[in-house]
Image 1: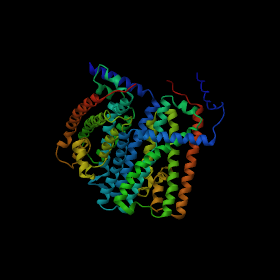
Image 2 (image 1 turned 60 degrees about the vertical axis):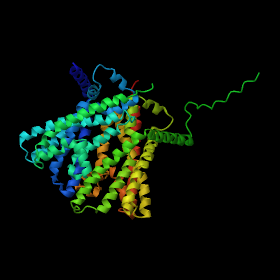
Image 3 (image 1 turned 135 degrees about the vertical axis):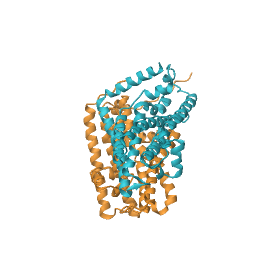
Image 4 (image 1 turned 45 degrees about the vertical axis):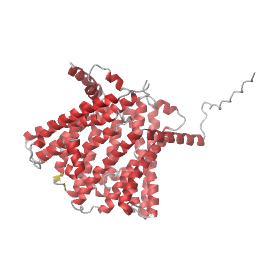
Length: 259
Length: 288
């Protein structure tokens, strides 16, 4: 029953967004532009050094592709988490809290963004191109959508954790969420590039490594432990558990607005 | 029985069509600037978070470059002693020049409040410039913390190359800000059609991030990207002003850069104004 309600709300919202064709086209093109701009900087860096801690350009492109796919999945299904700080300031959360549904999943699915298709397209193209250049057997390509879905869920859970802080530190802008976003985009580079502390944070605290770096290392033969491929769903589930707990804590702090 | 006090005379109301004096216009912009700065400082926790995010975002690329140089200095690349001060200065300038016009205007268009802005007796572009200046004051204050902190570690490396380099940079920075404002105001015009800031903001952001020289000096770019960047105004916002500061552009080259900046600034601001005047004629204000 719950699932049907969520699905109906999600479908209605997505169809409404798709009606604005110019917005759709512009969103897709500009999301791709943003990814390509980041790729251009990676190109500049790898033009200078040819490889980064043993990763060549095509392998770094795979990291960029997987990051974009994780982002795209999250934006397509759970994007409304970005509105939480604004809803708290405006008191809009009151309306959601009295709905006869679970607040968190309903909030997450009720505002998909269509520029997500731009990230999904460019991410898919980059990841597939990198696998092709590296002669990865086609059967192993099936890992890509699996890791992307796990990545989208894990990233969303990390955003929910950050959004929960907005109940305590009230403000209309989602800078705390943007910090998490930047931690995800750091995964476009091999994590061994960064100082050990940051590498450990991205592996153990907010385990984005489990959805991008470790799987990529495994598929290109840099890491031989098969856990590198299977850690993604476990890390995603663990983060979802933490996110639900954090959201519950956050809602208990919520005081609504005076007006 | 006391006699009632005579009524306080009301200030003379402005007649219909009566325009503001130059002093009134300037004080109007100043009031807008001061209020915008105060509003920006109101949410302290958000401000700290925003600043930390900005520093972290920049530090990702610094850490990558650091590792690249640890692997061995790339052939033809500037020495480490020049690159890292460049990156710090580029970050500070970029952070100071971050303006939120797209977000602000989009919000006001969506809520229909743009009608109120257009009715105000102040020029719309001037109001946007005043608010962008407030963004600059606020962001430059925070960016100066990074500059001072980095100076403590890097010492002379972050100092201007010479007093004349500092003077060229000061002018270049003002012109760079005007170019940034001109570009943003031009892109803002697109929001009047799309009613949504996302695509517009991201498109500009992507071009700026690639071609402004924020993540690397343009001299390190492959020829193809450098060629594209040469036809765009973004390099005049960060790359060229930082080169002026570091004394890499001196004498006639420095004067030519300032001239090019002035031309870009004037061209962009006037083009934005020309487009805005035409857009307002066909603007449909969003209801309720």
